[in-house]
Length: 208
Image (tube, rainbow, N blue to C red; front, top):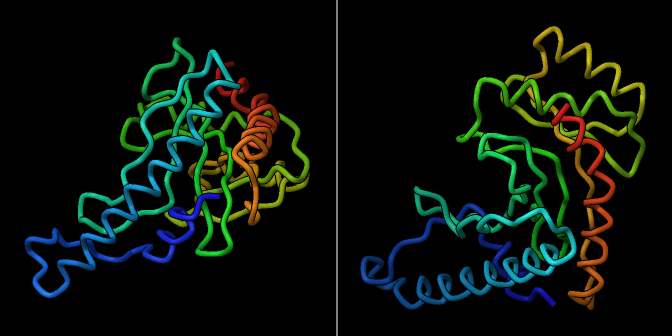
């Protein structure tokens, strides 16, 4: 289960060079590309399986396996939106996390930075209007650095104050699903569906 994803995670941050331009590394780069494409396809199958459970939410395209600088980016993601949502709106997303042999998928309420409008941040931070408890947690960005914050009422209050003062720029709500050896696609889809159910109240809050 997810063998290509697991193996591709080992290449996080590695530079990819087109085989025809990589000299003695041509064969290795060809193998890397094949592995990366297979990993992305595995994640796409996960995203499509979840899509069948969370209608009317519709999945966007899975992120590419490398960035514009041709650096390997195995932590794939996929956003889900309602037909009434616009690209700059807050959405629900699934995102791969971790490293080889120790990884999982998180379900989150977040937005695409490069598509945001002047209202997106204020909408995103409305997730703090809803009470929270573990295993949900916050992912807060302060001074350009994001950190995990335990999901409890004390931290919710602190983050509300930090957002109001401008110390914290944005706050996501996330739910992690560790992937174990032998996990089936059906079982993973069940867990992801539960994750969407758990973060849905926070998504709804961004619409108010």
